[in-house]
Length: 133
Length: 133
Length: 133
Image 1 (tube, rainbow over the protein chains, first blue to last red):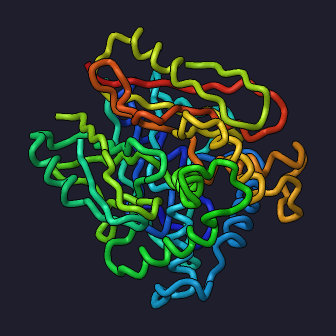
Image 2 (image 1 turned 180 degrees about the vertical axis):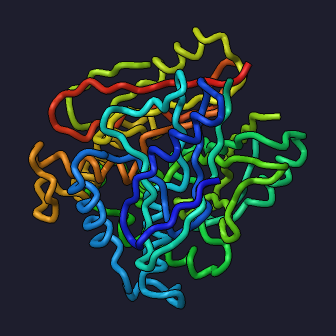
């Protein structure tokens, strides 16, 4: 289990934390699965080179799923709560990545991100699972 | 294989059916994969506490992907058919969830849902797979 | 590893390439995972019967995520680059499909597609992983 503290809405890379955990597992070839145990954060593979990509993603999702949209009945926890659930539905809560010779088979520009959808800082738990040999 | 009958468009929780199947499998630690064998329904992990969340999700998707949108050429099976394919593409048809000590590693408020996108009642098949020991 | 050349933006079926690879693996029951090593292409399970579905999907995504949208700061690689990242985030870069008796447990009308989001022809790499017996 990985616990990730964040500073509120936005993308947070944690590729190296995952790589270290794989190292420590002693499994060289197999399948890695990451699963975020929340419904207002999600997991994303995205470009890890130009930070503008992360800003643009956030701008796109902010426009597509508006905070405080009167469409939403579920608003007790704040104007960003239901939008957070919708954003999680539009992205995903789990990732599966093959592991080969001790390394994830990521492309050169791929990083693993937690996408926090609430504005307030949060602590998020990501279950990690690796099966193989 | 799980067969789920529904009453048409909306979210249908089936967390307990999956939990029972894991129990009966005799596997305590491993990786669960669910895969819906249709292209106009999808699988979703979402909040299982406030039912408003499910209504809000549906209202959001109904507005984003309009039934009968003249953009769509594929309309022979009805005005909700192509929107159903788009909704399935925007969500997903498979879920992978780590299993630990006989239980899925879901967060406290996470439930597993079949998201039916057609208006008419349907029967949907979900393939279940569990690897581990 | 599968390498798929394409002719630019659109959906490309590769179900049969995957089926052949499973055949050659000698594994009859297990879990297949596909992972595309790029952030401007994605993987999709979609209807494989009426080609209009693929055209409609593309029309929908083109309208939802506009090429050259002034919202985007990341535009050095062209007006379709950031939209490609957003489309990949809205769909997904990995698929997991149970395999039973040597065959993927796909529904009758489900096909596996690479969804290319850039306009120019590309070569895309898809990592394939199969665990089982």
